[in-house]
Image 1 (cartoon, rainbow, N blue to C red):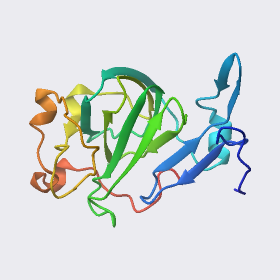
Image 2: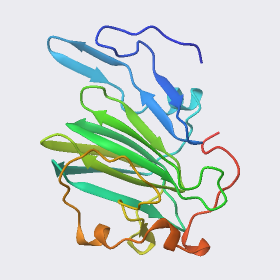
Image 3: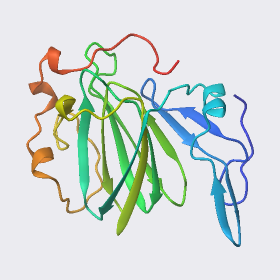
Image 4: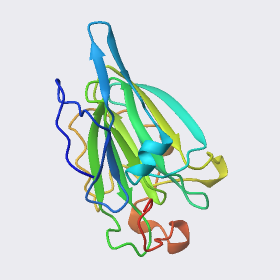
Length: 204
């Protein structure tokens, strides 16, 4: 895909989907049309996303609201791994994806991005990654699409503060659920507790 010029305010004049440092993770920069009345943008368009290499099929949409300092994660599903398209529709979050696919050349590495209602950016996190975020603003509404249905029996996690991962979380006082606070370190998980690396890009 060719480079496009930026419109006023730093927003692209054409939908952009860019690969990040971990295989399959994508940064999406939708086109935002704004004027004195407000703005409009497409938060997902199947054909346009597929033309730019993101052909994931989504089956469930979720919307969460959290206050400043709330940290959720790191979450994943084992037998039915979820790809996620994440966006902050109100406020700002620090969004993190961790490669926990056994056999992956980037196993244990992470990538983070600030998503906000000012930059309108989205992060696509492929199946097989653990996901988490913390809230930077007074309140944040997070909208995300999933490629698999949520299954409570398949819900798994990794402790957010795992020293081996060394995630560069923003410095603030966090509020974490009891469940998330009890999650194991990545090194404590056995092979059968981790999703498998398929040796190809997801999506292609």
